[in-house]
Length: 369
Image 1 (cartoon, rainbow, N blue to C red):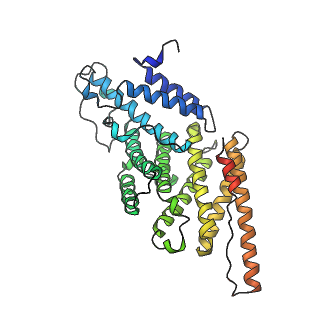
Image 2: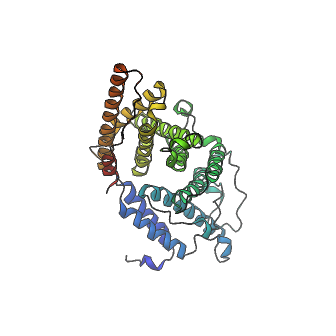
Image 3: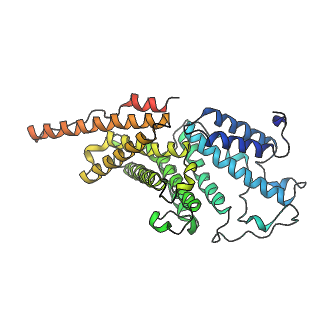
């Protein structure tokens, strides 16, 4: 306030971004206040031209231009993550920005006295910026998905498949050092790198979920047309739950991610519960068409996640709501499965129609502030 931050100036954006980070990481649950801080930060950054390629401003040194690219990439990532969490449209529109990605540099490659930036290092070389570059590329696809799913007029299904292919391609082209291959393949990686792999994989799976989840409750006449989307949504939900179980286990004192556990905050929690919610929706609409093995796998993963939310409920209101919502749904599911078995035993030819399994009021309670 003393620095009159609304007028902009040197380091104002960096200071506000640091302030947002402090507020964000000191709260387990989502906070509307931190999202509002971010919106102010983005608007001030745009007022100062961070959304434009630094080459448009010849008065900026190569060092200043590269640092602005880093800041803008960070703002872009955080904007998308918090917008999804708050279920609001993203603040940064791709059409108004031409700021390129930062280069794959080590911090020793240039400094404030540099008059010409060297060529970036190849992306086979791990630097502190490689994760930021890779994540921003992936988040740009998430931005496409967000624009797609929030449009007033529903785009064509062909557009869904086109974006889906782009998402797969972007994940496949991640640098090898940042590809998720399971904990067993990451035993020699540092906790920071393992966390980065986890985040990128979660973003990829969340992207699939955002893009395809609206097709889960498709009608009978649409069954074949949207089967691909329903399968993708279920796969993504199950993958997110498996990641949830891994990160909780590895964040314990004996785990590989114990020193990085502070990174797994409300944004990650929101993504993890979204995976559980997608599986619940799938079971609500398509349980009768599932084979018994897949049904049991879904129930097992949901029960495990419910237990993890119960463990976290002492420090998180959202975790307590998530645990209760899952408890209600799973209990109702068990009741309906038992009722179906009893009816089939009494009359094997009886066609059983599954009533609405979703305790909508419980899930609405979890989403309410």
